[in-house]
Amino acid sequence: MAATEPSTDSSRIPPIFHPGTSFVCPKRSFGSGANIVKRSFRSNWCEEFSWLHYDIRLDAAFCHVCMTASHGKKLMASTRRDPAFIKNGYTYWKEATTAFRKHQSSECHREAVKAVVLPRQTRDIAEAFSEETRKQREVNRKVFVRILENLRFLARQGLALRGSGGDQESNFTQLLLLRATDVPLIAEWMKKESCKYTSHDIQNECLKIMALRILRDVSKRIQKSACFAVMADECTDISNKEQFTICIRWVTDALEVQEDFIGLYSVDRIDAETLFRVIKDTLLRLNVSLCRCRGQCYDGASSMSGSKTGVATRLIEEERRAVFVHCFGHALNLAVGDTLKRSTVCKSSLENAYEITKLVKFSPKRNSMFDRIKADVREKDHAEGTGIRSFCPTRWTVRADSIVSILKNYEVLKKLWDECLESKLVPEVKGRIIGVKAQMSTYDMLFGLKLSEKILKLTDNLSRTLQKQTLSAAEGHSVAKMTIKTLKALRTNEHFAAFFENTECLRCATGTLNPVLSRKRKAPERFEIGSGEGYHSLSIEEHYRRQYFEAVDLTVSSIQARCDQPGFRVYQNLENLLLKACRGEDYSSELMETTEFYGADLDKEELSAQLEILQCNFAVDGKSPDD
Image 1 (cartoon, rainbow, N blue to C red):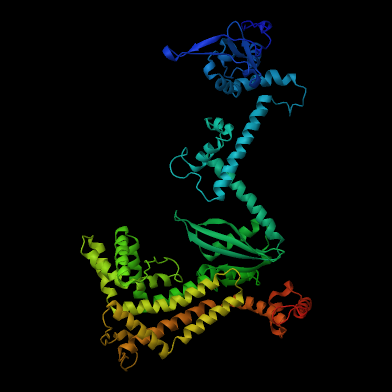
Image 2 (cartoon, rainbow, N blue to C red):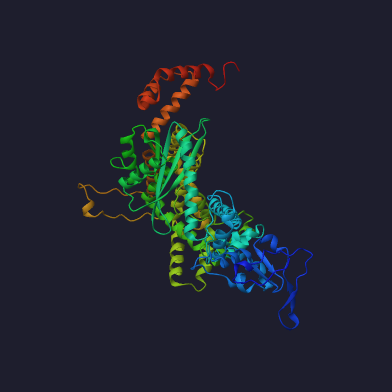
């Protein structure tokens, strides 16, 4: 079919013409010199772009839809028209497909489709969208799903969306470009200048929608549970803002314990009233009733666990069965910290030990020197050596291994200081090394390290036991009592004599100076009570015995004060009720206390019947009598 030149007269608009595969289109030359390439119109373009019209005489491509709309004056005056596809014809075959796609998504073409194509269709106006619009919508949906998948992956793996550098080098953009190798639509999509759904605001909005969907699912699961417990803690993030963390602990129908992280909430203040309102608001948004709360666990801060106006006290006032417990592991860490800070000899020794680890581990040069000296000593003495372990900056119950590493490398560290002082050092570093070297030559530091090691080994073992997931409240309380009993057993003259003798052997092996009894000093008058003379140790052994007993007593009293919590006694009473029922022992007192505390939660008669069934079906060793 021949085509004529387009004219402003609508009667002369030719019908649309698509050349067949056998039709030979003339070729045009592109380039110059030796780089001349001849290209022509391709018939397969008409399959992808059904609106194309090929003019044989002009060897040019037109948009038949836009031509019809323009000649019929159906385009709005404000619409920006493309003369290449309406009047002049498009002939730059080198970039043809790109130009066709650009025109297809242009405002002019969409307006022409609405004016010419839609009226010809018989479908309902709500469904009468152009084929091009429908295809574009499908492309948008497919790419947007890939964008959501990228966001979900990065959020699930805890990776920053932006990363280092600008938007083009961000993790989000680079992951999209990587997926473009498998999904060509993404490559075309990323070339767009706008409407790509990749801006920061859209990313944050999508993440928020995902988070709300997860919270709704979590809320549905918690609502099915008969009871739950609240765990919360506050901390300061890297941007110096207070963040309040809330978690919910609940039990499934299969008696499986679940812990769900609810979120981080930015708060202006960390007083008890503000934090309590945040907890209540969070439960309200989750549609979880506070009357089903049966437990709460926070740290030892006064705003959280204060006995008068703390969050725990305020929550108990609204729901008395919400038993508050201070995490045993955290309580133990605070107890050990209180002990070592109040014991003068332990505090001084640990401060020096922390300085030693900083001098060695924070300097690659000194760390390499330490490794070399250690290797020489190990080869000479045919002994196995260990490196220096850094101190944990926040937890006290993981420092025993660090102290042991210093004691095992005492001689190596002394040689290291001597070698360091022979080289040129910054005055501040040189002063620190001289101070540490002087302290390591004293008996007080050696005694303090050995005493701290002895205490921390017991508390570290207790800490590891308390952190087991299968540990019950009664078992945790029992393990703490066992540790206290062990510490009390150390407070005897026999144990001290063995400890003092062991320390003396280490002193001789490391070349530390002999212990010296401090001179007698009179206390300031403001501290004087009465007219009697102050007591002074008569011997070196007695002087260190007093410090040894003081550290042990402080540890025992601190652990007892931190671990003896009313909330754990409630849980322990519940466990004893079940255990005594299984063993066939009398549990009447535990049953009465439990039913009185939980009130309407437990029916005394029904619980008694169930405990009798439990007692009849379990022997003392935990097996059924029929077995």
